Length: 249
Ligand code: BV8
Ligand code: ZN
Image 1 (tube, rainbow, N blue to C red):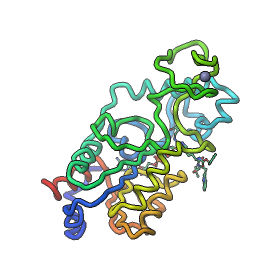
Image 2 (cartoon, helix red, strand yellow):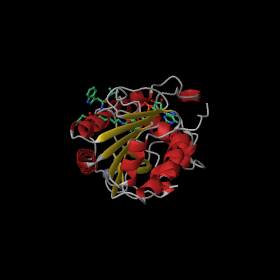
Image 3 (spheres, rainbow, N blue to C red):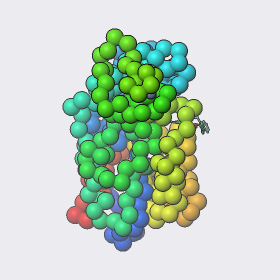
Image 4 (cartoon, helix red, strand yellow):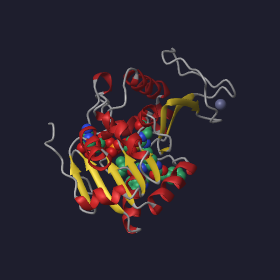
């Protein structure tokens, strides 16, 4: 489904040319064109019988740590060879032209950083990091194909992905910085997210309530669509490069 030429309202282009303070919330949709499944998309293979939110929980890890460990090992394997797409690179370009640029991502794939963005807040952690479930020490190395879940070299506890599971608190420093960025930005972009998971989904509304302009770029409508000032429904990997071209090209 490639989109025709996107036209960007003059007012939005003019505002973006004024180099405002931008906050950008991203979700799985921004990585879809890099070949990564979104959360909504059904899992495949032996994971098809599991809902992501059933595996991404401390209860699941308690119940069957090896099953959860193997799921993340499978997702890390799927990440090998995956590269950022033009949507990620357009955000790198945008960062060069505005006063303050903050990416607030729900993605655990590290593709924003791989594309070259510096100021990336990882609200839900990263599957590229592994830590101890007990003492939280980060592991430098680990064996994804080990017979059993590897142990922590510090305390012997089980290792787990350094991500935020459902029911777990978000990293305080990342969340506080995200709330600050949302409350003090001039324009808030919500890109490739279904806007269902909290507290991430409330950030756009926090920005809106502070008078920021809200722009949604998503393949389909979300709970934010009716509140957004500008809505572009389509693929972020196609729309974002067009936007950058229209403003700074
Ligand atoms: C917590 C890491 C408490 C793990 C993730 C209030 C109301 C209701 C429920 C709650 C609430 N507050 C808290 C909850 C519970 C829960 C929650 O929100 N549940 C939901 C399901 C209702 N929240 C939590 O549990 C949070 N923790 O509240 O703790 C607490 C507080 C203090 C002390 C102790 C405890 C933790 C939430 C984080 C969970 N971890 N990920 C992992 O990855 O394995 S969430 C995970 O799912 C992702 O990170 C992301 O956040 C979410 C998936 O959403 P999206 O990224 O948006 O992806 P999705 O597939 O849904 O949508 C993709 C969109 O892109 C679609 O709209 C599609 O159309 C579009 N698209 C597709 N292709 C493209 C595209 N768009 C553009 N271009 C394309 N090419
Ligand atoms: Zn430990």
